[in-house]
Amino acid sequence: MESPQAVHSSLDEKGIKVRPFDQLLLIIEQLRVKQWTKNLLIFAAAIFSIDTISSSNFAQVFVAFLMFCFVSSCVYILNDYVDREADRNHPTKRFRPMASGALSPSVAITIGVLLFVTSVAGAFYLSAGFGGLLLLYFVLNIAYSFKLKHIVLFDIMTIAFGFVLRAIAGGVVIEEELTPWFLLCIMLISLFLAISKRRHEVNILDSSPSSHRKVLDQYSSELINQMSSIVTTATIICYSLFTFTSGHSLKLMWTIPLVIYGIFRYLYLIHVKGSGGSPEKILFEDKPILMTVALYGLLTTAILFYYG
Image (cartoon, rainbow, N blue to C red; front, side):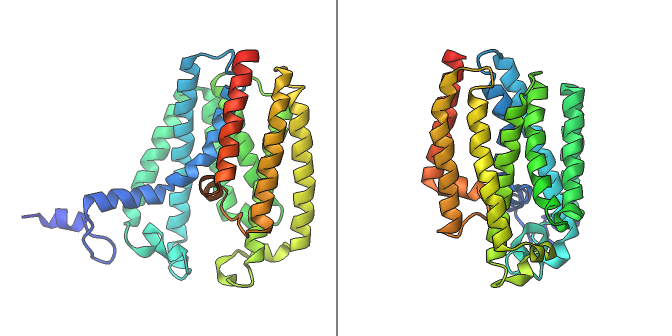
């Protein structure tokens, strides 16, 4: 027979008994593991240095990737904890673990604190520079969640800077200097994704106004389309310049058509199919996008490995 303490620990906020396996699934859902794909960018520096780095460097980057994932999950936990009451009145967010009452807020916060302390301590052990970048990433995300996401233009710029930080962190871990063109490419493609997401949100604003932030009132479809055109053009030009100014083989130019197709496919999904609200969802659900990304990764790795 279970003790009163054991029974209490297995109950959610509504007094409904939750099995340990279900509790684990709720925790995984709370960590938003699907969004960890955003942190794969930390491998970029290692991939573009594949002809010079060792297997131990890749192991270090993998550990750094996990640390970024855990810290990003800490931000999600904090956001959902703060917004849990408001989320309960939201048509879709009310199903989130804490908002629905299925996951105890105290359990979620405890897990978040443990992940944060462990990750930051491990990051500084790995590299002081990487530890500093991880802390900056956390502070930036907190600032975005509570303030910057409500300021027009600053919201999308902050998202882009977060991706640049990931790329820089990957270089710091393996002590590899990143070229300005590389960082510009990362910033521009990140802006492209952020602008695309805002376009999706603005387009569905009229149908579901309660699910959007006030900052979206300051955007218009015309403004977003103009920004998208500028950033799309700049991204293609910048990446093309990067392929033959990066110091690597000029055969990197073979990847330019894949980048152009990937961007055009994404624009097609946004403008024709009405997608774009979740880049990580598109990556796994749209086969042409997924195949393009996979082919780009394989081709780039092969070129750099065999031709330098």
